[in-house]
Image 1 (tube, rainbow, N blue to C red):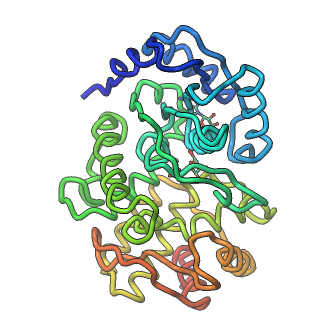
Image 2 (cartoon, rainbow, N blue to C red):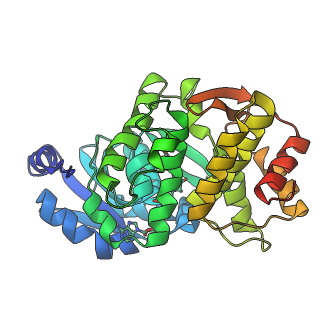
Image 3 (spheres, helix red, strand yellow):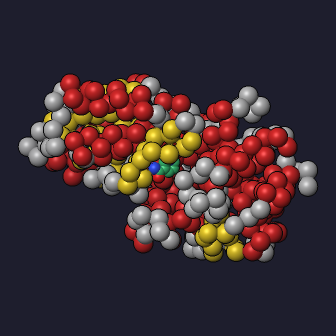
Length: 344
Ligand SMILES: NC(=O)c1ccc[n+]([C@@H]2O[C@H](COP(=O)([O-])OP(=O)(O)OC[C@H]3O[C@@H](n4cnc5c(N)ncnc54)[C@H](O)[C@@H]3O)[C@@H](O)[C@H]2O)c1
């Protein structure tokens, strides 16, 4: 199946609906994706805003640059911002659009697999603050999300695999036998990519539809992220482990949180072992010292999803059967890293 959703967009972009159009890119999507987008969308009049790529630039400085450009080119409430990039760019772009003049419209055109299956959907926008992930942000839906796997042709293999972390997560949250983890690992990650983008982004969209502001069911999408985000933040501030990509940190988060699920909710050991083996075929194993693990635990206290000093986890009773708001103690957390490190 070829994903082509440009026809509606073409009409919109070339009508008088918008007073001005801005396209936000980073240094890579400027080079690799902008020409494809221009050709497919037929967009003619626009101003380009370019920011530096990478999670380290998902910050207020990039926002200042974007707001400054919107000002310089007289953006008004009828302007449109098109975010052409991965999850970092759609998170920042969505946030800047939602706050500029109390909110202008934006469209997401994800160009990484992670963006296509996850980040571009669901209306969570934001930036990192003082090394804490997504600490500042708002909920605001894009007008549209255009999914086009052609952009993936220039994505590095590492970034492609990084995106699969969120696909794995979605496959652990569904009990649909055609999409669950055991069915996903039989797929060809490259040849089946259009199927994967369409089906696994749908899983996220269905969950979001049921609970937009994360008061209940949407919390299940945080599987692997309570520990994963803390690991990601820690990797930026510590010299003891290398900086990790979002997906790499989420994979450690999934394995450790499934171990905790096994201990607390009797998640089947055979599934746990199988999932760990399969995931570690695709991702390098990171070595965590006792000190690393203790510091990661402390960082979790600051996670925005926690209420007061409670650390709330999403755990699984079985594949496709998540349970939210589970608490754990430091000891079990430490054991989960021992399990990950094969030192239990
Ligand atoms: N809002 C949400 O619901 C949500 C969900 C999941 C993840 N996220 C966020 O998404 C971010 C991670 O997203 P990501 O992995 O897409 O990172 P990213 O946006 O940093 O992209 C990864 C790298 O690929 C480059 N790139 C992008 N498209 C390319 C292309 N087509 N060809 C060549 N290079 C290309 C980028 O410039 C960057 O260097 C994290 O900040 C995470 O917090 C948000």
